[in-house]
Image (cartoon, rainbow, N blue to C red; front, side, top):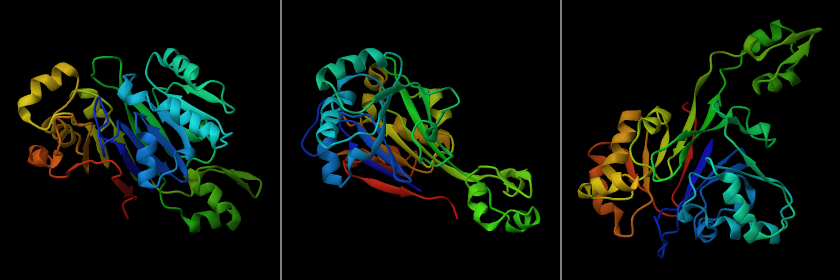
Length: 308
């Protein structure tokens, strides 16, 4: 199960009721904050979310409207008594940006680790114990006016456990859960692998967070089969298409076409220009292409579950 909450849906400048870019994802009691614009802490409080549980802050790029909430958040964690490490991911240039941010925060009593996402994706339990074994964070290049990347969070799902095979192999009942977690066990003097008692892997869950981007093949490829795409939709009106492309953004139609090409299940539109005072007025531009499009708003949340 994955819980996703939008904490900021504005572009460039926050406005009343619309903080700057941020999304919070929680799985098995652990959390990732995607981007951290101004107003993220206020939006989290309104949504009843504790950002103190954040394990990783995943930054899409280094424009101010996506990162300027970080110094205040880290200082709040300090004043709240945090001692656990926090990790920050981002595209090329992260060291330079975080040096400036740490100058603003001053010394902190907890470790702030900078991580690169490997090409095969980062198995989260390798840096933070407690994440499910099949929870993986991956990144992919996006198309903006600076170096930028989007993120894919996937939660794999093991095949069905076969108790008959487990008994035949002499696996004691108390070790069944170990095999179900994807770890091998020893029984009757021999090693038993999960593959010996588990069926074919079943469909898992996938969430995409784009950050700022124009339409691009890498986004479509990364989003294939996604359960949810949280997507740049800066301009509602199709007449702004050229402006969107020039500035490295998308219209509602561009976002919907991306979701359609990717075969996604649903699409949340976000990162609205200040000129888009009522996103719902433009929603048809998206739903006419991809019916499962929704106008995101600060505090909107969803619970994603495995197919039965």
